Length: 148
Image (cartoon, rainbow, N blue to C red; front, top):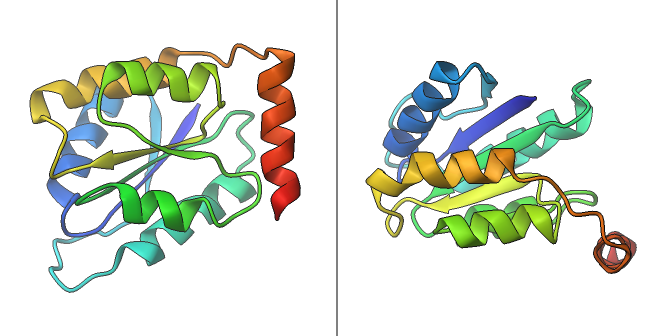
């Protein structure tokens, strides 16, 4: 599984922590930026980069992790694209449900809300929880894709 990472200035340090965790646990990562802490950067460009990377990936199960201050901006930007199911997550239960029920392929984290001590557990749960594949879940995903 390849993980594409993106963060604005609010999520930059948390992105570094997550990248180190992923590397320690043998995940392949691609950092889509920002590559330096820039207080004037804007989150939509990083969401777009991660989405483009996921959509063009040859990996059978590409995933993305996006981080900004509230997580909401990244989530809104990523969800503008067909086939993307970005979920705003702040704890392990939300991480589990976003994968199990909604087959989320992008995890959006709120750097100003989530506790640093919880981040690795949230990411682990999100990455290791499978999609339940219930017919009602598949139907709902198709309904979302049909909206755009």
